[in-house]
Image (cartoon, rainbow, N blue to C red; front, top):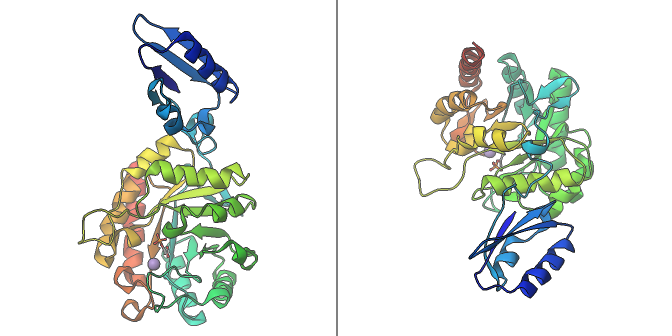
Amino acid sequence: MVAVLKPGTTNEQVENLTVWLEGRGLKVHISKGEFQTILGLIGDTSQIDTELLEGLEMIESVKRVTEPFKSANRKFHPDDSIIDLGGLKIGGPHFQLIAGPCSVESPEQILAIAQSVHESGASILRGGAFKPRTSPYDFQGLRMDGIEMLLEAKKKTGMPIITEIMNANHLPMFENVDIIQVGARNMQNFELLKELGMIRKPVMLKRGLANTMQELLMSAEYIMSGGNHNVILCERGIRTFETYTRNTLDLSAVPMLRELSHLPVIVDPSHASGHARLVKPMSLAAAAAGANGIMIEVHNDPVNALCDGAQSLTPEQFREVAKKVRRIREALAE
Ligand code: PEP
Ligand code: MN
């Protein structure tokens, strides 16, 4: 971190500031020019509040040269993180297709979808049991019954499962869930993130509706700083001024996040676009952009789905997307 001091700052002020910074564990390198003094702050600056520094009378500007996230930072962990789900790997050169309905609706529904997406190449089954709905009058999910139906589908197909948590008190219900999803609306539920840092189960963290990549990485940092390094990032579209699509898929987040961080990056084209017909082109683009996987909503009867029918693919449409995504992956490998 570099702090530029205002012209006219006295030696005594520089000394006081240096003592204060050294008290926070930093080494201070003072470079005195003819008109300006610059302080180079060396050490762990992640706990320094840049705005507080900038607010000090003698400071003209402050600039970070390293990012405020440490555990998630590729600089300190150059190799890709690979998450091992009993042999199924997420991250690095591995690519996984996650598919399933927005919500688990019945044992028959989840099993039929699980079997069909599995046959088409999906390796992980998704399905919401606790649903974060905008309206309290909408279907809220089958809760524990939904998790049990997912576990039953897992038993019959062998697919690991991912489902969303909304409250840390529900953690015991997630004991046999393979990946815990933190949805966009909870990306900055810091108390929930801290609890997930205390377990060792993989967590997929979805980018918030209006959050920057740095905020997403800082939320990953909340989980990782607790000791849980099994974090997967998910780009699911952000809110912009555009209204033809449900959100705006920020595809540049894929190479950018992979450059900044060693964590796997998954793309969710379903929530990003909101329209089933856009899921295929966006899936192909996500694969081409270097995503470590794609998560797609699939329903056997989209028109009657209890949640997100408009963006859900039929099993047949999913089969076609999965096939084309494989082609893109093959082309990238050439
Ligand atoms: C979901 O994946 O079911 C979901 C609710 O997504 P998001 O949190 O991205 O809106
Ligand atoms: Mn959904």
